[in-house]
Length: 297
Length: 218
Ligand SMILES: Nc1ncnc2c1ncn2[C@@H]1O[C@H](COP(=O)(O)OP(=O)(O)O)[C@@H](O)[C@H]1O
Ligand SMILES: [Mg+2]
Image 1 (tube, protein in one colour):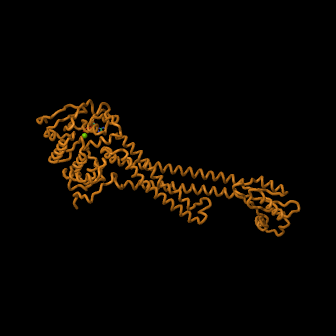
Image 2 (tube, each protein chain N blue to C red):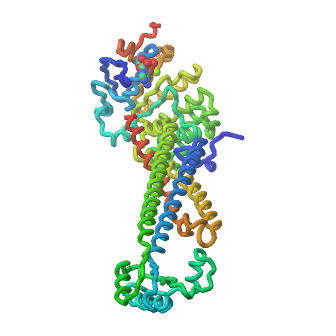
Image 3 (cartoon, chains in turn purple, blue):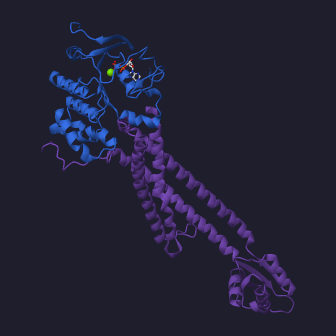
């Protein structure tokens, strides 16, 4: 084969090496870190949803235990209570639990007694509340008292406090860990970019001494490392998406577990990952190139 | 000038090169020849004193103006500094591309120049596959391809045989005739003596002689 110059065959080659053995390592590092950050983002989003879900369920309802008073039958008292409660503003529905269900609830404690009719068994009234305008337990209590009913209102506020605290903790913990991992990923991408660029110091120097403007050199490296990081970030995000999708499918319609419900739409939070990785790498490349060029002056 | 916190490697130098002149810089290894060239091609700054080039004090040149000045300076580095991922042709064409030249406009000139330095058959070769002398000639081709106003060459005949050395020298003479100022650092006494060109002789960072070397001297 002749090495004779062939104008038809020749096309100016890019200033920077097209591909490099070192790029593989950098792509791998970026991919792994992006994957971890993406998993954390998914965990955070689903933990947030789970916490929200728990609280919402509790806020939306209350339970009232109605004890029959005087000669009133338990069923009549429950019916009257349900009617009363339904009239309170902010109550969307109030329903007395059927007698059979009430028995079912106490059977485990009392055994299969036949003459339940004789016992003044309390009845339960479940109340569904308007979430935007939730009446307080005291309001419900007053409404019952006004009608001469003896009831104990449980608006789940005791639980709610714990649940809210747990949700708050889950949210901050998830968010904090996500930020930590994302920050570490960014730092490692920046360092890897710096190392990659330092390995090509010779190219920077030659371009510089041949009269290349700094902006040109910085732009070359910026574009170069942004591309590498985008590839790595995409690989990491896709892997995390695959894991998320697997969890979603394994969990069926309701998600894997109530504790970590992943929705298909959650996978959207992974979209910015390649862009973020590219941005970090581009910035790191720019800073490194700038400082290298400053050293040469 | 000095490297980092090291000692001054060049001291009390005062000289002037006429536009269009042709000088050698000689001296034993470590005398400061390469350092002197670095001062001129803006790779180092003097700790004290002035370096004037093309009528400007380049040690005080604004950063944004430096690239344009560099494009008027051709440098043959002692260690060549070829870009390993570029073919011989692309290496030689580098300064023209950096200056914004269009491939169609420089293609033939670059091919002609490479043929002239004896690399007609190696234009597509990668630097790693070139012999020392071929690399040297490629480095020279790259340095002169954009017809610089001044050419600085650091040991440009260090890796070639006598015949090629004379050929390279004739190339420099040719460029000089076209108006390029030439400054060559070398310890090739034979070349210096035959050339009959003026010499800046350095020893220990000081200039000890300045003038045309007598052919009779060793
Ligand atoms: N990059 C460098 N860092 C530190 N010292 C250097 C460097 N380059 C050269 N020197 C020192 O500067 C002095 C002059 O070196 P140099 O200019 O390369 O001389 P020459 O080219 O004449 O052999 C020597 O003492 C050498 O050790
Ligand atoms: Mg030297």
